[in-house]
Image 1 (spheres, rainbow, N blue to C red):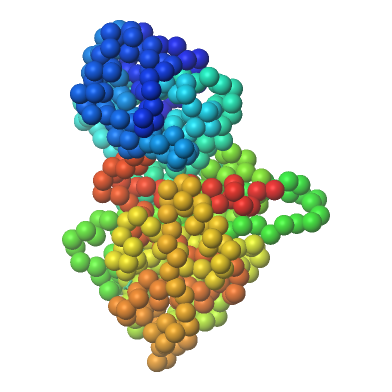
Image 2 (cartoon, protein in one colour):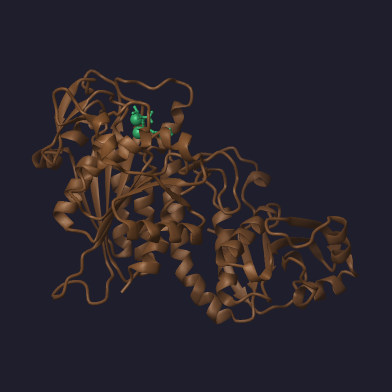
Length: 495
Ligand code: BES
Ligand code: MN
Ligand code: ZN
């Protein structure tokens, strides 16, 4: 992770300098000093570039003088609209313009400490790389920027704000690492091993294998897993951070619960997917990846909340032992399911994990995340996750957290009317509802396993992976959901 330091505002003598400039702002502070030191090169460069401080705009001035390698101006937009999210995106944009520098300073002398910390967060998030499998990269292709100084008036307050953000960035990185890993490496067992490492952060981690799940009667999850030589796992991660929680505590509060779909590779099974693009299905565990990163973030920043994270980890493969279209399985809830398409496997995994979660932990609410349907991509594209919920309050809280973090949700309907699409001729339900409203019938299916508990389902098939760079997200695994749910907890559920 990019090394962040908060230091006293002073013009650097060398290296790169980033100026954060609001729309229509007059030169002042370090900006003015730098312009004077460079004999007006900055003002001339910005004028030539037509830069006025608009949100999302950057202007790079190379070799402006005064020993500086470059000046990067980043627009903040209108001052009265400035928010932590905009500051973060400015930090991300700055980072993207600093690739050839090994260290840089960001002039945040005009910003309040929390906004300066948000700038640092954005830069850190944008600097993420997944280089584990590169062995022949030339030095100039490797990440160069390793150290970033923020020049800020109140360093103490900025450091405190950053201390609350850094663990969230670490959670995001953990999720991005997991989601980026190739499927031959990240099997269910390997993913469970990585969960176990979280005990270092003070989480309690329990792992269930096929035997335990068989004894419990997880027929739906195990049906998906049976075609693979890579055994399934279910992992439960506990974080007990609420005031007065832990042993000997009296008035026990209900935990909040997060559940993730962790299909480490989804071939479709016997209902096999077409070859083109099938490699994308390595990230069919992004829901679980998010839950794991979120739990790490909550523990890392010692969130004052009791939380459980559960992930159902399986590989969906075709083989001589794979489940067939037409099989009927008995879920942990007791409800039977006719599996008419083995590619609708995520809902089968979630069915057992959700039922187990509500039965065992009696949570205040359950939020599941899953790369569940191609249909949600058709509905919402890549800029909103689909939100399905039986609880208006929880939905509004998620929407608010989405606006604050930029990890946006869009509420979709749930309605009994869709249930007729799930009627089976021989079992309690079938696992597909046909093409119309495919994301909705999938959510409607999952709802049958929440037992009336407050619940929200996030279909993240369109948001878990990005094919292009965004301000704070290099292309690839986005870790969508980590910041959304961390924010949800921080804003509404900490004691
Ligand atoms: N993992 C897929 C959904 C998916 C598709 C995620 C594209 C990310 C990108 C899921 O298991 C699946 O295969 N869903 C089917 C359901 C259908 C068979 C009812 C789908 O969406 O086509
Ligand atoms: Mn599938
Ligand atoms: Zn899937």
